[in-house]
Length: 313
Image (cartoon, rainbow, N blue to C red):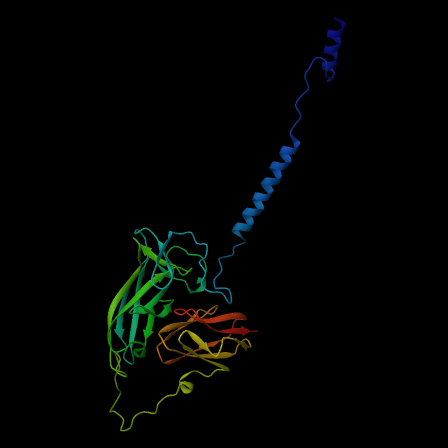
């Protein structure tokens, strides 16, 4: 009886009797600390993923070729568009659409108009992730790329259309250079186009009587805008002459890229997203202002040849 009273007294005073009661479980402090640490890490990981109002990369990194970004919209197919770009399949409902019309220009060539639906041109985010209903367009003549389009209007010179009947095609692309597709087919539109004899392109006309003597021929030097530096390159049998090297420029200088290719191709300046059609056997000149510092590769799309590197300081 004495023991019982003592036990009751002990419990009333808040003292346990270890001989009578089993030990109480201790709080798993280490588990609580681990859970708290994980919660903190997940929070900061979420902040890093969302960023502080930033956006995806808007241009190719200097010196790199086209890379597919991490856009997850649609389904990326193994099928390509014929120019090395994979198709990005999206449902027909709300998918991008395009129509093209070619109107003869009063001076030379044609004025092309692209009518798009569920699509917007995004030149400032080219090279970033594929976003729904956004990107640019490619213009092709009989399957040969002529230009990349960043808006609904484009002037096509008659000199780029050989004499005879042709098919002009426009195709829509995402910012990561994958081609938008529905039911396994690229989103595109086409119109027939007929080129005239040399010097007689669609829309060409005179403003008076024909001159008594032929006009003076315009040399490539006179036709090209003035430039601080000129790089002349020849492509023959898959080889570049002179051998590719670096062209050093100061920021703000203008450089003229004069290229002659033995087969049709497209010139592309990475980082600046400048392109120029290269007719077979004819010299073509692209002049640009080096207003961005870094190392930029100049290459051809068809033959995938590096022609030079622009080092802008």
